[in-house]
Length: 193
Image (cartoon, rainbow, N blue to C red):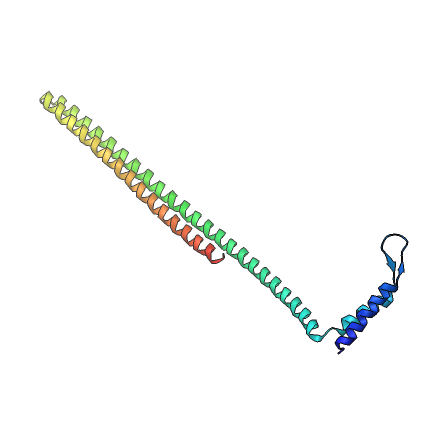
């Protein structure tokens, strides 16, 4: 290992070569012996303490570690994004299925309610016609028929409202399920931030 005097001597030698260099006619340039200067620089590099050489090696290793960590972090982010996309797709599929089920049930309930209402109205109209045909008191028959029709209309209305309430409840359940999925996705995303 060389000492500080050797470094100074090599630097002084390099300085002297530059001072003694032939000045160019144009600008502030000069001509030097390239091989001689490179030889001195090589001697300086070889004379560097081992600590500096190790520091350069450690710095290179640190850069490699940082780059590997960045690559790993990017891979984790990509995996998290893919997993979040899969959760969203699954949630959307579940929500679509639940919406279809709720809509089918609602359609069925509404159709049944309308059929029952039509049957009640027809029955009321038939009874009213029978009462008139049987020469019962026209006023009583009309009143009973009106009450029956009104009752049928109330029942039909109640059936429709019950069906709408059921549909609203089912849609509320679907909304609640979707909100839970959204909360899970947000929690997953927070873990990767």
